[in-house]
Image (cartoon, rainbow, N blue to C red):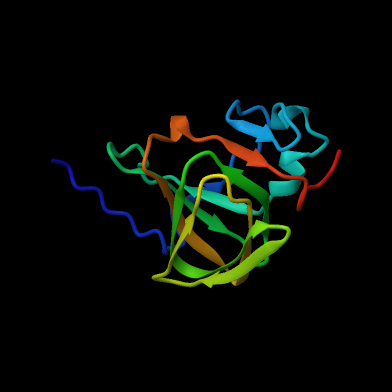
Length: 156
């Protein structure tokens, strides 16, 4: 067995997130159809907001996505078709989740875990120092669908 070690809190090995994701087939729009057909601009919304690690991420049986987010950046409101778990390593996330008649807010700090239930919409805003975290799912990421809501976007 190969052992891979990566320090996700270190400043090395992070690159800007690919901004050409609007055409991702697993990104859907709340009103129906693909995100690519929605009146929003993925690149303008996420530009300079998130980074991905260059550390190996293709680890069998551990479906994960390490991310780093700049201070005060808000990830637009969205939900997934499966449960998602977030593990925070540095900084903090302010997460608003739920439906308009029952919105709750939590602050997720280093060592904390947030479980987003399938179908529950949420918005994540990084704290004043940003946030470094991993999101993970119980199935391969190829089975993940993200439905984006019309909140927090730069419109075309």
